[in-house]
Length: 421
Image (tube, rainbow, N blue to C red; front, side):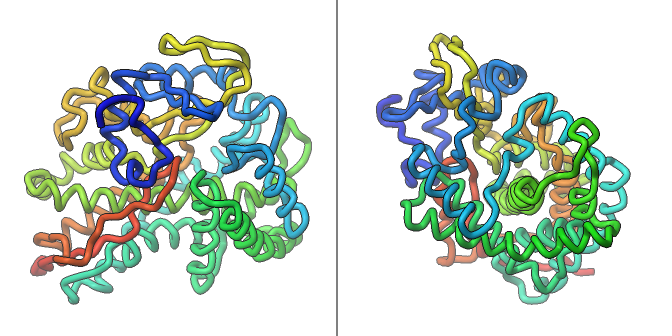
């Protein structure tokens, strides 16, 4: 890739391996306006950090309040909003899409739901499930790693926390995939509206659950979300707010991103056998850093959007009020100005947790502690069950789903030598 003029982050071929494009932008155009849009892509670590730590200058919500979820153009945004209102519930702003004081008030409820004590209670279930999943196919000597391990591990865990029945989990997965594709910025209008319709199916599945839990609360996380009165609001969440949270901050935030990190980590281990042997030699010493390095190098949430409250200068570029800022966590995570040999998977890396893979500031990912436990137990089970593993010959194209915001490996066929027990 020769220069910034060649960079097109909407190109699916670039999205397959965007890291060279990120390097070009960091070096030549660190605050890059995407031609024909009001989107400015921020790629250097310090600039990304500034945006995340200054929510007043770079708010999470648009001043005009227009429904723009996954729609870069206003007209499509209106069509999407109309489809939700006609057939289901128009999703309200999610936690990530709110600014203080509303964000702080709403987050307090989530902080209670994801408090350390609850994560500690979940931890043995994560451990047990990781081993159960691998033991279900270890005798085969092969698996499709994404569908047989990476998807069910976090999906079953968040599903149980949300009170979903195990037999419904794969239906729910189809709905989270619809949300995943709806926010990709990559769909033609007809496919975009098709994903909206699938998401509305999910709304009609969850709505009776909301109503039941209002009458009969239980100990599930979803019951907490349905019934907790947000003190400063003087009310519980509305149906529109609940439906937004079910997709964005619970099932998708609580499963899709961890799925993608589990897939990325396995691919990295097979590609870096020296790291695999080092990790196996002393998992207690190296596992924590390995998990952080996977999130830094592959960054399942490649970027998110912010808005500009008023004209602001960033990285030598003036961004006009009302523009969108695409905060490229993945580019920041490979910034040579911040990380030595950033492209290297380094189990001795100092301050490995200083990456932007979980965001920063007031919007730092509230599910990060659970994600870290799922990744830790996932790869601990791999170490305990596999002597070695490799890519299945002729079965992988290592393709990623086209997506402007997230990084998701479609499938990963592996073979392995089970460890003798």
